Image 1 (spheres, protein in one colour):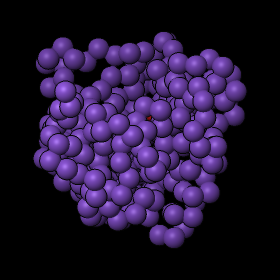
Image 2 (cartoon, rainbow, N blue to C red):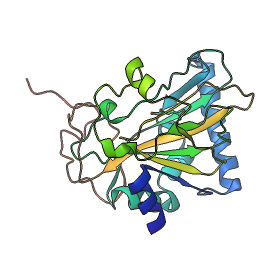
Image 3 (cartoon, helix red, strand yellow):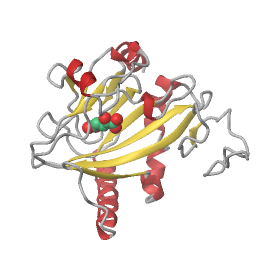
Length: 244
Ligand SMILES: O=C(O)CCC(=O)C(=O)O
């Protein structure tokens, strides 16, 4: 385990192999596909350049809720952010072959969901293979040590010119693996050129000793392990009421 923590600290990411068994992946992929079918039945399966998805798989599936609470998963998360683990939200997405421009130009995540102590990380659970061809995640190892970089959003061409896809490290993965990454690491992914869809669920989690910079900022605030030291009656509401 120390190996995972050390690698993460040094590089800003860690690929954990075979966290979920092939049997578990089969069940999770079936639940994943059921969510996708439900989206399609509501006409919510329009792709943006080959990518579509939804937030919050635990709002669809009890099995997915249990998966986010799986000790093998949380033991790894604990290595990176400590024993108090709060779910901000999660995202399911499928990436299919496309001629369009990638929606994931190189960026950092912090400006989308800043927290006071910058503990936010992502845990990307792979339900299918991730390869260079089908648009796997690419990262700049060690770039998390730059902290908050100005203009590091997906829509900033100057930032993308500085951090090309070509020079980034491609993180290929197998079903059942989990890729963890810091919200400061420079990352992104190219359009898929493969007939094999890429399927992932990405959980965004932060330490229960940390807090969102703005309490009105969206968060599920679900404690997956330990304690949330900043919850109050007002923040425990789904919609935080603004003071008049
Ligand atoms: O996994 C990918 O293709 C990119 C995802 C990403 O950039 C993000 O969720 O911030």
